[in-house]
Image (cartoon, rainbow, N blue to C red; front, top):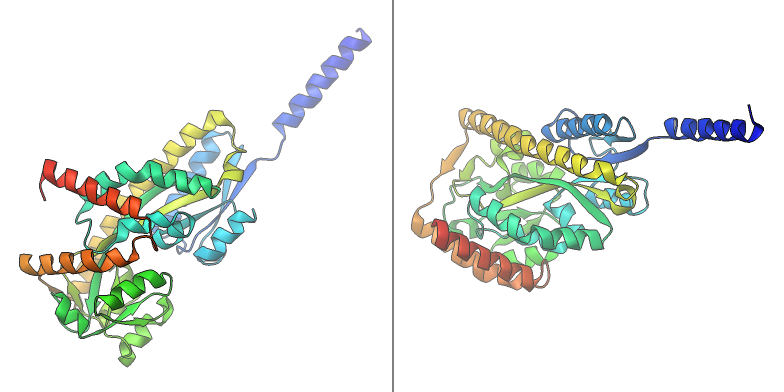
Length: 335
């Protein structure tokens, strides 16, 4: 064989072998969700799909149970590339794109259909803000609706104002809005809420029912006001740095896979919450009805109060856009 031809063949073999045996792209994904929870199962499904779609070229290594830290820790680690992705709640997503919290203003969005409509309208704006911060949203889903849980019956704002209400430490502007509305706000870390309820330090809290069951808060705060406060959003994000390393030919299929897993996660969460509500009701939880007049009292109070956080927790532009989209939706579909 001609020496030049032999050299070319050897080079082709070498480069083919190098491509075949190149190390896969590993996404280290942090999560605060427990192992085998719906979020953990969704991540494992995405990991299996991504490996299959790319023939093993893109893989995930999942760190559940807050092994990779809390949400601020995971965001910081993504910036430094020690993590390439994370599952985040509304609070974590808001640390990346502050306007995410505009979707969780109490009593503004009233049901799933309104939420889906508004999200479809403002999603491009939120995705652009995340990308400017160096993050790519892979998928998101509605985690559930927040409700008030209290030691005494609550159905209107005046009744809740008489109680000491637990609030997290993540959003000072929101806390100030609650106080401006006349509520007795006590800052309590999540892991201290149950002892605080037992001791009388607090008498009410707000959380999704699934978490109220998991944390056993309902055993002490055994009244749930039967009116959702606000939707809670969750999402899976990766760093743009890592996403840009994914071959373009795979990206559309990978995103579709993640979206399908997020859709299934939503239905799995609904089913679990239904079971959780059944268990809580069988074990002493009381749901307190809210009249139409009282519903208007809640909405009017919070429309006024949360005007105080516009420009702080989220931009005036997106807040006004949400109100306009809701107005359009209600004119078209009622509500």
